[in-house]
Image (cartoon, rainbow, N blue to C red; front, side, top):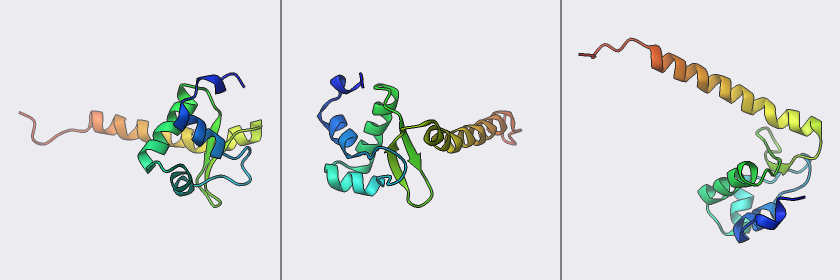
Length: 106
């Protein structure tokens, strides 16, 4: 895969810990323990792996929960479903907050 050559040491370490496929996703807590990094650092690295390096990483929220490297279209669909739902919910919240009448305006 073409993105591997540009990973820094921590990105490579997290990448190497991620299982291929959805069957045994790796929980954040385990990635933190195995990498020696903290929650925020691991989440940031996963974000960079996806957004900057185009690594197809999915997250499963039901048990077994955790992160995994997407290997097929079914896994892609499963990874996208909660993201698109979250986007819709956040968009609705932003719309309401942006349009709500405020009682203390001057």
